[in-house]
Image (cartoon, rainbow, N blue to C red; front, side, top):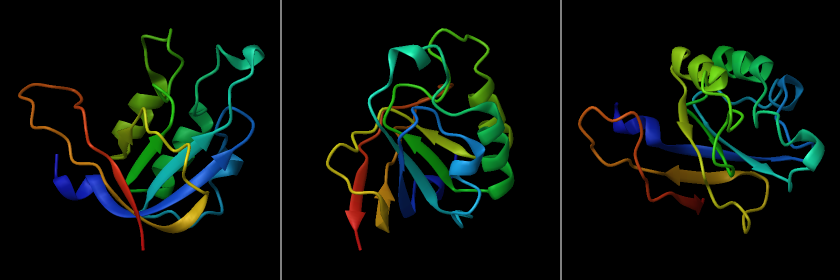
Length: 135
């Protein structure tokens, strides 16, 4: 993958409902930006839901962000081996970054993200050292 996909202007979006929905992203102006979702602690009643809804993943594909990141272990439900949200985002050319620590980050823009992956032959993912810089 082109390393430019892993660096760029970033926007941190606070998600209070546990799951990111289409209406959370529609009016953000995110084309070619890194969009990072900061989630609230999850309620036990939504533990089986994905972190990003499939409808939202489709909208993100159309909005064309450079990268979508989240402070959870997966954008999909952990028990869903079909990984529909991953598949929708990847098919749209959207890079996925998971497991971020956004606990000390305030929502908003004015950030620059650098999260370069290791080069792993035949890998489908990589650890990164993510740095979110204010600018």
